[in-house]
Image (cartoon, rainbow, N blue to C red; front, side, top):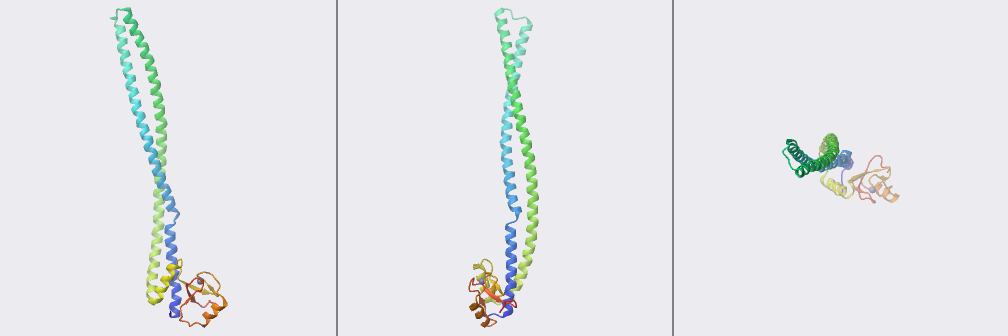
Length: 247
Ligand SMILES: [Zn+2]
């Protein structure tokens, strides 16, 4: 393939813009904020799940507490009724009197047992609610940090996108000045060779694969016409001669 030496040199400018665009795209994909956002989102979700579990536990305990409260109330009412009967002096038979007194005693014991349970449930609830408050605070903090990290990510993305737009415009303008066949060859090699389609020959070395050319290849290049499009024998990239080629 033939191409004017100036066009070949401009291929290196095109390569520089493509490499810049690749670096920007890579930076966009690998921002540290991306991993941070992922981690924080997972943390917020986990804290929300943990809170749901504790809320369920708390509402179970609340139901248990209401039940014990109702039981205590029932025992208290029964005791009051028994006591009133006892105080009224209407209970005549000694046997009935004894039964009543024994019932009041057993109701006292029952009340004391229920009050212990009540206390135990209240203590459990306090532990659950304290942990729930902690979880909610942790979640609030994590959500806040997540929002800040997302903002930082978006700001950096916007910078990268603006830079990428600028690079893309420059690239389009430059590409339009190059002959179609040279451009097509460059694109083909670039897509097959890790993003580098054209490389300078710098002091006898290919800047694409960084290998020093042997004397035979260098001699062949010295003899080639200036408009001959050369390829590196090692990496097959388009090899562009410059003033620093060492020929
Ligand atoms: Zn090479």
